[in-house]
Image 1 (cartoon, rainbow, N blue to C red):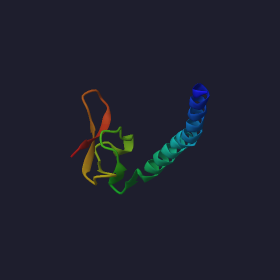
Image 2 (image 1 turned 180 degrees about the vertical axis):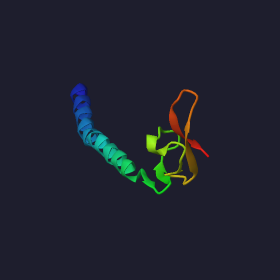
Image 3 (image 1 turned 30 degrees about the vertical axis):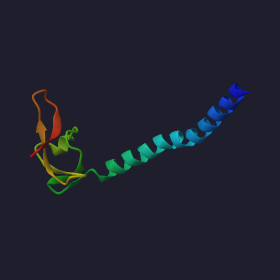
Length: 88
């Protein structure tokens, strides 16, 4: 009897949790798409960059402003020949 009750409770819990877990990846995909659409060139600088992220070839040696903090970053080449947004 106790075993049947535990199994029923576990199944009911799984039903309640499953819809939330299924919607999480979709929500993350929407957020990722929104952040990509924000990343754009505006004259000689870039808007909505992510600090430390790789920067495109067109942004090399140019400045950008972080999406969240609005601080200024420069697309700089590191010693390993990777171009990333570095605090200016």
